[in-house]
Amino acid sequence: MTERTYTALIVDDEELARAIVKEHLATHPEITVLAECANGFDAVKVATDLKPDLVFLDIQMPKLDGFEVLELLDPQPTVIFITAYDQHALRAFEVHAVDYLMKPFGLDRFEEALVRAKARLDQGHPAGPQPSELSATAKSEWPLDRLVVRDGAKVTLIPMTKLDYIQAQDDYVLLKTPEKGHLKQQTLASLEARLDPKRFLRIHRSYIIQLDRLARLEQTPSESWVAVLNDGTKLPVSRSGYARLKETLGEG
Amino acid sequence: MHPLLSNRKRLGAYLLGWVPCWALQALQLLVMHWPLHFALVLATLSSALGAALFFTSGYLCSALPLRQGRQPWVIGSAIGLAAVLMGALWAWLVLRFVVLASYWKPLGDLVRWAPTNSGMFMGLVGTGALFYLVIVALNYVLISQDQRQEAERTEQNLRVMAREAELKALRAQLNPHFLFNSLNSISALTTLDPKRAREMCVLLSDFLRKSLRLGERPTVKLAEELEMVRAYLSIEQIRFGSRLSVEWDIAPGAEDAVLPTLLLQPLVENAIKHGIAALAEGGTIRIAAARKGAFLEVRVENPTDPDAEHPVGLGMGLRQVKSRLQGRYGSEIFFDAAQKDGRHCVLLAFPTEVNP
Image (cartoon, rainbow over all chains, first blue to last red; front, top):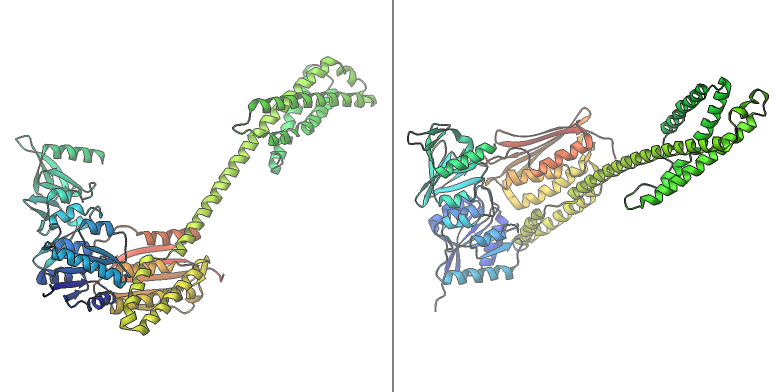
């Protein structure tokens, strides 16, 4: 009987931290390390190209953190988080990580994580939930201070301050910045739950605006309201959206 | 403590307060057609005796403080009794002195004007008791004033102590993630490069010992603080490898300057966190210090991620450094943290102190 083989990716910005994982994996010929990545951008690029079964993922990294990397991967690999921080554990399991190793860890603990990872991979459904669901559940980081978008292998970071408005488009959201629009696979409702309600407001079933972009409200001949943004963009305002706007702006 | 004796001004005011009493009494007697010299003698006698006798009420008041939970009728009756007794003693003494004074020829007629009869005596007792009660009230007002001041002082002391404790905790505070990450590096090195693993153990112990020892003192010489910062940075250098380089620019003479303990350490930790750990290719941290007249100027610079959204205002670490400096030197400090040309620069200046 030939044992199944697995492919793996090691992601950590510290060389020594990657070295430990590599060393522990050296006694596991069934696991092939495809690559090592030292930052989040590389990790997304390499994982998208090579589609590893298993990712050893650090959380605090330059450019993208481990959660953002995971959010951008499709299909979702099986993930073992490795970090010095214990405060992310809850969120790690919300995104269905197989295990959460705390630096420094012993060989026993590492082997235990491997056994779990293999068990999940052998069950045949390594992928956790879809990325869009992921963001909906991972509410631990709130409010968001930036959004990550992947277009092919290109990853873009969008700071929340750059957003003008967000528009729902079927299973996607269109993130509109002054320069361009970015599509991201996520529902408007799940994104809304992670936004700062002091800065963002849902004015319509399909639209969320950044409040400081709102120039004025105009009434159409048919008595419905339209939001005019600073750059002249006109967006529809629903009845309940108008009520929310009045309440929020009335307060300020 | 007698409320009138707690400071000299109060005693003076108390004695001065008897002057109008004396004048009023004399006036009252003159209105009753007493001869001037008799009126003055009696007023002086009774005022002097009253000032001395009723002064003792302060001891009673401080022995019977008005506190919640004490039965008011106990205090009330004690004071009432004291008022009557002291009034009677005063009246008796005043009349005794009148008799004594009238042995002197020019005052021989005084006894006629102030006869030692029960009517006169009762009148004097009433007046004395009333005076006594007024002074009791005055004493209680002063006592409550003292208590309020005392409470304020205590509160202020507590605030200062809490601040000190906070600073002490701050100084002793060690970033646990730094420790875990360092231990992880050591764990990796034990098989890769045992010699470096040992070196790192020594560096880490060195740093821990220094920070524990310095944490016990409120101030240190810049040289000592820098020694610890160097130990810290050599550890981080092993962890981050080529991603971290450090430039030093310590002007001659600056190392003898004295500064609050562990003031630079959080700045350097911040620089590592935002400038090195957050950047894929890392960069250079620059640490400069120089004496500028009576001030010590310190600058810590680190590269920043151009893509990151820079938060407005100061982070926790910088805020604490600033408030420590303000707490110690008041408005005599300069503190600036700014983003410029892709680098974050913290500049601070504060008065140098003499050696501890």
